[in-house]
Image 1: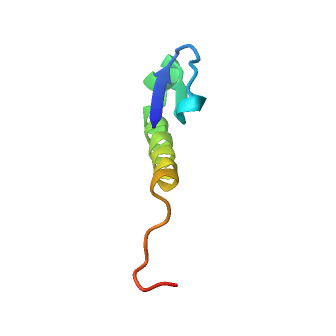
Image 2: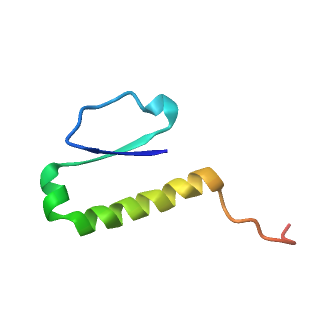
Length: 60
């Protein structure tokens, strides 16, 4: 799971394996493209944790 929080308080999320990514309001208004790239990279890394490496047919 992934939670995105903007200028919020901390929450107890570790026990649920939720990664919380926080951005300030200033970042959202002034660095949106950087945030989008950051989130894309985080999602790709989280998918690797959930799905693991791809299955290769016939591999030993």
